[in-house]
Length: 178
Ligand SMILES: Cc1cc2nc3c(=O)[nH]c(=O)nc-3n(C[C@H](O)[C@H](O)[C@H](O)COP(=O)(O)O)c2cc1C
Image (cartoon, rainbow, N blue to C red; front, top):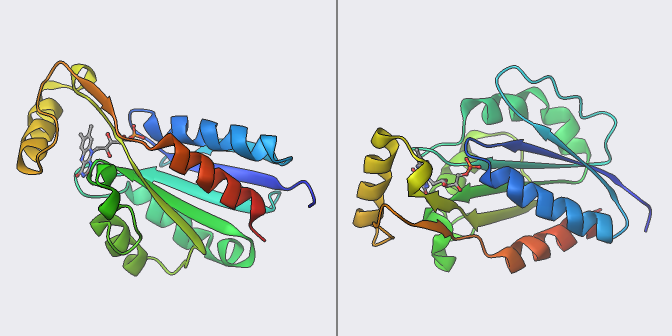
């Protein structure tokens, strides 16, 4: 297979989504491809033209991906539709394996209905809960959400819910995309 230039565009707040991208980068490199990572923010100006494949990853905060993600997708819809592409979402709800499908994860299901892009490959990963690093408001809110959904509520803990084997698998899928 030819060496592909694969761009990972990520939207993160606390850096977990970029950690996932770094692992994906290792996998596709191992598979003989050439990865690049670029952060998506309100003022980033990302040119997709030089790349053969595009992967967009974004985390959920308070029920949504950042609006920049939606704007970026709509702005680049023609390029996205013309190249092999993939999307992944990172959220705490996906700590439950049953909530890791594009239809079974409520955020991804809603998001896919909102955008015109139909990513041929989709993954959903459990995120990281890092209470000690959160501000008071976020800590209280996340703790409440966790209490409602039977997740960890001990404010001293950091829990990584990402199944890194699934990340590796997704990396291999991206490597084989055509
Ligand atoms: C302030 C805040 C709000 C969050 N809201 C949600 C949410 O509504 N639903 C959910 O499933 N996960 C939620 N999470 C969990 C994040 O999706 C998870 O921490 C993820 O790893 C964050 O990725 P990032 O570091 O790339 O931004 C929230 C986390 C924080 C800190």
